[in-house]
Length: 323
Image (cartoon, rainbow, N blue to C red; front, side):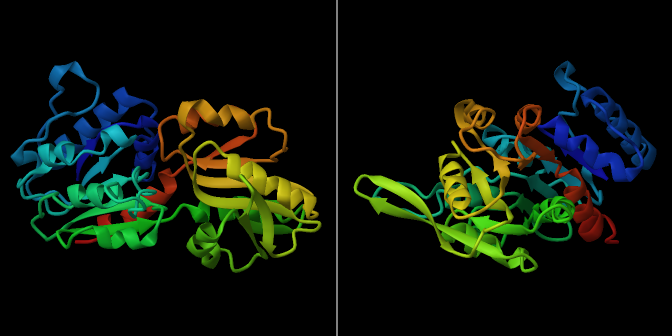
């Protein structure tokens, strides 16, 4: 196995756990990679520029490897140049670029003439990853904003659209021991995106209604009366829509409110608005698809659901068992 890691050590470290070696920090990760590659291929990693993580992989190290895994962090880290500089035409047997958060996903269409649909732009850039010895490289994305973005990539790579929803379902299984649980979607887009993953639970859909210059969130379908309602969406920015949705659900009879998003973007530390919110959230579930999620999860009501197991299962089930 060849391993190339960029940012987000909170994510890249524990992914190695299923390989029977627990990684606690970047230094241990570097040593593990060095020992693993040396044992399998009789080579060693270079520590160029005295960084803790491997920064170069030569042709001899990649040639014939089963996997080269690229784990990206925030949007500044997702760069085809970073990927290609580690892998270009070096005869890797297969290559998977793990992009937990696709940062331009909400820009999937042009609403104003002249504005660029940057979701297409990033997909095209990632599509320039060179072929491997066995064909196209793979790009793994978790809960991309719109499923049609699969078709923004070219045939030069294989997009793998994974989901973190199973992590939430484990938590919901515990919650329903205390209260009846319903799943709410803050808008039609979230309903279309995720409702098929919660068929075992009553669904509630909210909608935004214009009242003059104001936009009011109301319950459109479903009855939250007496239920612990979990609001589900793919990402959150400031969280204003989630708060308005929670108010509407409580006024319609919900007894408890929680929320889940895969990608806790929260620009300018807007997550702090939920630590002392006018609406009480029992739990706010987030994943570590972004590096700052671990810090956010140190504060109530946030709870971190790590993508490590999901990534490991996806790799072990689809890639590493391939001959």
